Every structure is written in C-alpha cells, then in structure tokens.
Image (tube, rainbow, N blue to C red; front, side):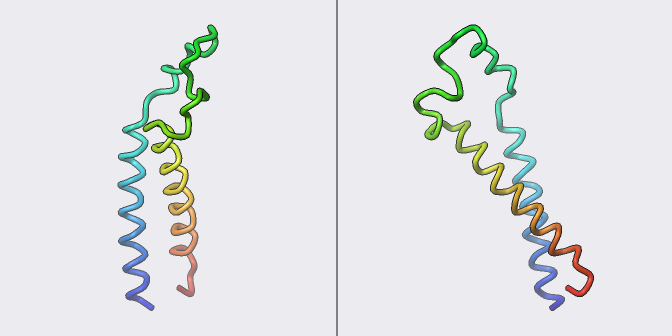
Length: 79
C-alpha cells in the first residue's frame, strides 16, 4: 500500500507542476475585452474548439479535476 501512495504522490507533484505551466501559458482575460465593442474575433467565435487557447483551457480543467481527486485520495487516513 505504501508503494501506491508514493506513486500517487509522484503523479500529484507532476500534476501540480503541469498545472502551473499551463496556467502561465494562457493569455490574460483582458485580451478579450474587444468583444464588448462588438469585435467578431472573440473566444466564442467559430473556431473556439480548435484554438490553442481552447485546448489549454480544456487541459487545465482536466488537470484541476485530477488535482482535486488526488488531493482527496492522498488525504485518506487509511490509505
């Protein structure tokens, strides 16, 4: 059981580092303020699902859920 805890801890640390890198790679939300004035080139445009920013956001959400799950599992006292 101790080996599994070490493996999950290593995955948790890798997840933390990847999450930090992904958040730093994303553009600031102030870049999207052109949508207020009616600009057609917004995040919600035609190619929102295929853009690099959309992929970063999707991967960030997946890693955040993994972070929460691993944190909960590693906090179980019997594990």
